[in-house]
Image (cartoon, rainbow, N blue to C red; front, side, top):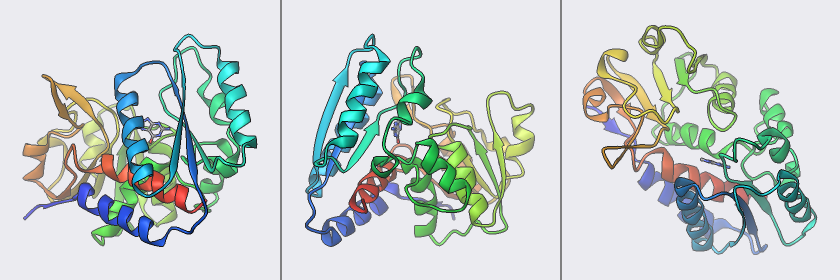
Length: 270
Ligand code: GUN
Protein backbone atom coordinates (compact mmCIF):
# COMPACT_ATOMS: atom_id res chain seq x y z
CA UNK A 1 0.00 0.00 0.00
CA UNK A 2 1.39 3.38 -0.98
CA UNK A 3 1.12 6.16 1.59
CA UNK A 4 0.38 9.65 0.25
CA UNK A 5 2.48 12.24 2.10
CA UNK A 6 -0.23 14.77 2.88
CA UNK A 7 1.47 18.16 2.96
CA UNK A 8 -1.83 19.98 3.17
CA UNK A 9 -2.82 18.24 6.39
CA UNK A 10 0.62 18.40 8.03
CA UNK A 11 1.06 22.09 7.12
CA UNK A 12 -2.28 23.07 8.65
CA UNK A 13 -1.32 21.29 11.89
CA UNK A 14 2.00 23.19 11.90
CA UNK A 15 0.22 26.51 11.31
CA UNK A 16 -2.22 25.76 14.13
CA UNK A 17 0.74 25.02 16.40
CA UNK A 18 2.48 28.26 15.44
CA UNK A 19 -0.71 30.23 16.11
CA UNK A 20 -1.10 28.60 19.53
CA UNK A 21 2.50 29.01 20.67
CA UNK A 22 3.53 32.32 19.13
CA UNK A 23 4.70 34.95 21.63
CA UNK A 24 3.12 38.39 21.87
CA UNK A 25 5.97 39.98 19.94
CA UNK A 26 4.65 41.67 16.78
CA UNK A 27 6.17 40.17 13.64
CA UNK A 28 6.21 41.47 10.09
CA UNK A 29 7.33 39.84 6.87
CA UNK A 30 8.56 42.20 4.16
CA UNK A 31 8.51 40.67 0.71
CA UNK A 32 10.30 41.91 -2.38
CA UNK A 33 8.71 41.02 -5.70
CA UNK A 34 10.36 42.09 -8.95
CA UNK A 35 8.46 41.80 -12.25
CA UNK A 36 5.10 40.28 -13.00
CA UNK A 37 5.77 36.55 -13.00
CA UNK A 38 2.28 35.03 -12.61
CA UNK A 39 3.43 32.10 -10.43
CA UNK A 40 5.48 34.38 -8.15
CA UNK A 41 2.48 36.68 -7.62
CA UNK A 42 0.40 33.65 -6.74
CA UNK A 43 2.99 32.36 -4.23
CA UNK A 44 3.39 35.79 -2.65
CA UNK A 45 -0.37 36.06 -2.17
CA UNK A 46 -0.48 32.69 -0.43
CA UNK A 47 2.41 33.74 1.83
CA UNK A 48 0.53 36.93 2.73
CA UNK A 49 -2.62 34.97 3.58
CA UNK A 50 -0.78 32.43 5.75
CA UNK A 51 1.17 35.10 7.64
CA UNK A 52 -2.02 37.03 8.37
CA UNK A 53 -3.81 33.82 9.44
CA UNK A 54 -1.43 33.50 12.39
CA UNK A 55 -1.52 37.22 13.24
CA UNK A 56 1.68 38.35 11.52
CA UNK A 57 1.86 41.48 9.38
CA UNK A 58 2.82 41.35 5.74
CA UNK A 59 4.26 44.12 3.61
CA UNK A 60 4.85 43.90 -0.15
CA UNK A 61 7.50 45.90 -2.02
CA UNK A 62 6.84 45.51 -5.72
CA UNK A 63 9.19 46.60 -8.51
CA UNK A 64 8.90 46.56 -12.31
CA UNK A 65 11.03 43.99 -14.10
CA UNK A 66 13.18 46.77 -15.61
CA UNK A 67 13.93 48.34 -12.20
CA UNK A 68 17.60 48.89 -11.50
CA UNK A 69 18.99 46.19 -9.19
CA UNK A 70 20.62 48.83 -6.97
CA UNK A 71 17.19 50.32 -6.18
CA UNK A 72 16.03 46.92 -4.95
CA UNK A 73 19.16 46.53 -2.82
CA UNK A 74 18.61 50.02 -1.43
CA UNK A 75 15.09 48.98 -0.36
CA UNK A 76 16.42 45.79 1.28
CA UNK A 77 18.95 47.84 3.24
CA UNK A 78 16.15 50.11 4.48
CA UNK A 79 14.22 47.03 5.61
CA UNK A 80 17.36 45.70 7.37
CA UNK A 81 17.37 48.89 9.45
CA UNK A 82 13.61 48.97 10.04
CA UNK A 83 12.94 47.61 13.52
CA UNK A 84 9.29 46.88 12.70
CA UNK A 85 10.40 44.31 10.09
CA UNK A 86 11.16 40.81 11.43
CA UNK A 87 11.95 38.95 8.22
CA UNK A 88 12.77 39.79 4.61
CA UNK A 89 11.99 37.54 1.66
CA UNK A 90 13.07 38.13 -1.93
CA UNK A 91 10.76 36.13 -4.16
CA UNK A 92 12.72 34.18 -6.76
CA UNK A 93 13.36 34.09 -9.64
CA UNK A 94 14.66 37.62 -10.12
CA UNK A 95 15.00 39.05 -13.67
CA UNK A 96 17.88 37.43 -15.62
CA UNK A 97 19.77 40.72 -15.71
CA UNK A 98 20.03 40.69 -11.89
CA UNK A 99 22.90 39.29 -9.82
CA UNK A 100 20.68 37.14 -7.59
CA UNK A 101 23.49 36.26 -5.16
CA UNK A 102 24.31 39.95 -4.65
CA UNK A 103 20.65 40.82 -3.99
CA UNK A 104 20.17 37.92 -1.54
CA UNK A 105 23.38 38.77 0.30
CA UNK A 106 22.18 42.31 0.92
CA UNK A 107 19.61 40.85 3.36
CA UNK A 108 20.82 40.93 6.94
CA UNK A 109 21.41 37.25 7.92
CA UNK A 110 19.30 37.77 11.07
CA UNK A 111 16.31 38.81 8.92
CA UNK A 112 16.91 36.18 6.21
CA UNK A 113 13.67 34.24 6.79
CA UNK A 114 14.34 32.04 3.74
CA UNK A 115 17.87 31.04 4.83
CA UNK A 116 19.29 31.94 1.43
CA UNK A 117 22.12 34.34 2.30
CA UNK A 118 25.68 33.01 1.92
CA UNK A 119 26.03 33.37 5.66
CA UNK A 120 23.06 31.14 6.56
CA UNK A 121 23.88 28.64 3.78
CA UNK A 122 27.44 28.49 5.17
CA UNK A 123 26.16 27.79 8.67
CA UNK A 124 24.13 24.91 7.27
CA UNK A 125 27.33 23.52 5.72
CA UNK A 126 28.90 23.41 9.17
CA UNK A 127 25.93 21.44 10.50
CA UNK A 128 24.35 24.47 12.19
CA UNK A 129 20.74 24.55 11.07
CA UNK A 130 19.86 28.13 12.08
CA UNK A 131 17.52 29.59 9.47
CA UNK A 132 17.05 26.96 6.78
CA UNK A 133 15.59 27.37 3.27
CA UNK A 134 11.83 26.90 3.56
CA UNK A 135 11.51 24.45 0.66
CA UNK A 136 14.37 22.26 1.88
CA UNK A 137 12.94 22.33 5.40
CA UNK A 138 9.50 21.50 3.97
CA UNK A 139 10.85 18.24 2.50
CA UNK A 140 12.59 17.09 5.66
CA UNK A 141 9.72 18.13 7.95
CA UNK A 142 7.15 16.25 5.88
CA UNK A 143 9.34 13.11 6.01
CA UNK A 144 9.83 13.58 9.78
CA UNK A 145 6.07 13.76 10.25
CA UNK A 146 5.72 10.30 8.73
CA UNK A 147 8.67 8.99 10.81
CA UNK A 148 10.77 8.49 7.69
CA UNK A 149 14.43 8.55 8.65
CA UNK A 150 17.09 9.25 6.04
CA UNK A 151 19.99 7.89 8.10
CA UNK A 152 21.98 5.38 6.08
CA UNK A 153 19.67 5.77 3.08
CA UNK A 154 20.68 6.77 -0.43
CA UNK A 155 18.98 10.08 -1.23
CA UNK A 156 18.98 11.22 -4.84
CA UNK A 157 18.09 14.87 -5.41
CA UNK A 158 17.43 16.23 -8.88
CA UNK A 159 18.14 19.97 -8.98
CA UNK A 160 21.14 21.81 -7.55
CA UNK A 161 19.64 25.25 -6.85
CA UNK A 162 20.46 27.32 -3.77
CA UNK A 163 16.73 27.35 -3.04
CA UNK A 164 16.23 23.58 -2.79
CA UNK A 165 18.83 21.06 -3.98
CA UNK A 166 21.97 22.37 -2.31
CA UNK A 167 20.57 23.14 1.16
CA UNK A 168 18.58 19.91 1.09
CA UNK A 169 21.72 17.90 0.27
CA UNK A 170 23.39 19.44 3.33
CA UNK A 171 20.43 18.63 5.59
CA UNK A 172 20.40 14.99 4.45
CA UNK A 173 24.19 14.74 4.89
CA UNK A 174 23.83 16.16 8.41
CA UNK A 175 21.35 13.35 9.08
CA UNK A 176 23.63 10.55 7.95
CA UNK A 177 22.26 9.94 4.46
CA UNK A 178 24.34 9.21 1.36
CA UNK A 179 23.48 11.94 -1.13
CA UNK A 180 23.65 12.18 -4.91
CA UNK A 181 22.78 15.52 -6.48
CA UNK A 182 21.80 15.39 -10.16
CA UNK A 183 21.09 18.32 -12.48
CA UNK A 184 20.43 19.23 -16.08
CA UNK A 185 23.90 18.14 -17.22
CA UNK A 186 23.84 14.78 -15.46
CA UNK A 187 24.51 11.92 -17.88
CA UNK A 188 22.11 8.99 -17.68
CA UNK A 189 19.75 10.37 -15.03
CA UNK A 190 17.90 7.07 -14.78
CA UNK A 191 21.06 5.25 -13.66
CA UNK A 192 21.06 7.52 -10.57
CA UNK A 193 17.33 7.65 -9.85
CA UNK A 194 17.13 3.86 -9.85
CA UNK A 195 19.53 3.77 -6.88
CA UNK A 196 17.39 6.08 -4.73
CA UNK A 197 15.83 4.97 -1.46
CA UNK A 198 14.51 8.54 -1.27
CA UNK A 199 14.09 10.45 -4.53
CA UNK A 200 13.54 14.22 -4.46
CA UNK A 201 12.85 15.99 -7.73
CA UNK A 202 12.97 19.79 -7.95
CA UNK A 203 13.20 20.72 -11.62
CA UNK A 204 9.84 22.10 -12.78
CA UNK A 205 9.92 19.71 -15.76
CA UNK A 206 6.47 18.10 -16.02
CA UNK A 207 6.46 14.34 -15.50
CA UNK A 208 10.24 13.99 -15.79
CA UNK A 209 10.18 11.02 -13.41
CA UNK A 210 8.60 7.94 -14.95
CA UNK A 211 7.79 4.59 -13.40
CA UNK A 212 10.80 2.81 -14.94
CA UNK A 213 13.16 5.34 -13.33
CA UNK A 214 12.43 4.29 -9.74
CA UNK A 215 12.98 1.04 -7.91
CA UNK A 216 10.24 -0.76 -5.97
CA UNK A 217 9.27 0.89 -2.63
CA UNK A 218 11.13 4.16 -3.23
CA UNK A 219 10.05 7.20 -1.20
CA UNK A 220 9.26 9.91 -3.75
CA UNK A 221 9.14 13.64 -2.99
CA UNK A 222 8.02 16.00 -5.73
CA UNK A 223 9.08 19.64 -5.31
CA UNK A 224 8.38 20.62 -8.92
CA UNK A 225 5.36 22.50 -10.09
CA UNK A 226 4.44 23.18 -13.69
CA UNK A 227 1.49 23.23 -16.07
CA UNK A 228 0.78 20.52 -18.63
CA UNK A 229 -2.21 20.90 -20.96
CA UNK A 230 -3.48 23.66 -18.66
CA UNK A 231 -3.35 21.35 -15.62
CA UNK A 232 -1.10 21.81 -12.59
CA UNK A 233 1.38 18.96 -12.29
CA UNK A 234 4.68 18.01 -10.74
CA UNK A 235 8.00 16.50 -11.83
CA UNK A 236 6.68 13.02 -11.13
CA UNK A 237 4.26 11.01 -13.25
CA UNK A 238 2.26 10.51 -10.05
CA UNK A 239 -0.35 7.94 -11.13
CA UNK A 240 2.22 5.51 -12.51
CA UNK A 241 5.10 6.11 -10.09
CA UNK A 242 2.69 5.76 -7.15
CA UNK A 243 2.29 2.05 -7.91
CA UNK A 244 5.98 1.45 -7.23
CA UNK A 245 6.58 3.79 -4.30
CA UNK A 246 6.10 3.23 -0.57
CA UNK A 247 5.48 6.95 0.12
CA UNK A 248 4.83 9.72 -2.39
CA UNK A 249 3.87 13.43 -2.32
CA UNK A 250 1.04 14.71 -4.52
CA UNK A 251 1.12 17.95 -6.55
CA UNK A 252 -0.68 20.05 -5.48
CA UNK A 253 -1.06 19.32 -1.77
CA UNK A 254 2.46 18.07 -1.02
CA UNK A 255 5.54 20.25 -0.66
CA UNK A 256 3.81 23.51 -1.73
CA UNK A 257 1.73 24.10 1.42
CA UNK A 258 4.58 22.77 3.58
CA UNK A 259 6.94 25.43 2.20
CA UNK A 260 4.63 28.26 3.25
CA UNK A 261 4.16 26.69 6.70
CA UNK A 262 7.97 26.57 7.09
CA UNK A 263 8.18 30.25 6.18
CA UNK A 264 5.66 31.12 8.89
CA UNK A 265 7.45 28.82 11.36
CA UNK A 266 10.83 30.42 10.57
CA UNK A 267 9.32 33.88 11.07
CA UNK A 268 7.72 32.88 14.36
CA UNK A 269 11.13 31.89 15.73
CA UNK A 270 12.82 35.20 14.80
N1 GUN B 1 10.37 30.95 -5.48
C1 GUN B 1 9.76 29.74 -5.46
N2 GUN B 1 9.79 29.22 -4.22
C2 GUN B 1 10.42 30.12 -3.43
C3 GUN B 1 10.76 30.16 -2.04
O1 GUN B 1 10.51 29.24 -1.26
N3 GUN B 1 11.42 31.28 -1.63
C4 GUN B 1 11.74 32.28 -2.46
N4 GUN B 1 12.39 33.33 -1.97
N5 GUN B 1 11.45 32.28 -3.75
C5 GUN B 1 10.79 31.21 -4.24
